[in-house]
Length: 252
Image (cartoon, rainbow, N blue to C red; front, side):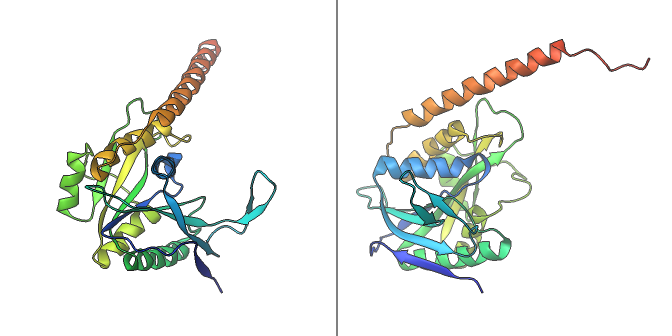
């Protein structure tokens, strides 16, 4: 029999809030973007989610202390044109479809009770090849969200993503829509080969416009340059190997 326990570290009540989901996925784009926002906005932790739907393991911190794997919720009180924000982050998603549905259903019920009216999910759109200049693709629960995303530079391409949106990034939108919560998904193009700070950075540029906030992206952009440098070196190594490799494409 499974269990899911939500521990409140602080009681909160938000107003017309936006939930931003940034769990691990392709290129860890969503996780990087959400974590960077939490750090820049100095958002505060309010809940920890423990569940048997997560992998059966503990993580070990720098002091050698073990902690059960979990998801966490952080909040930020907006002002002026900036709405209240709630962030969902963690090291894992549910391990199977049943777990995903169970966790996302409980989460939608929970965030609705504390004032969330909109859900933005963040993720990567894997292309299986290097992407020098990634775009941000979108999907939404309503035409109004589509138009607001377009005004922030998000592109909508017919038939993409072809396989739909898998995992929490899709389920939270679908289940939220059933409960009257509008929302959309921001997907940064990525190779999917490695953690992609460049893709996370372009997602955050669109989010800045949508959320009416201004944040420093220099740390992510510096990490993106480091990844680009490593990628360039790997490509040069591959080119050198292919030039040195004898031509065996013949019959003899």
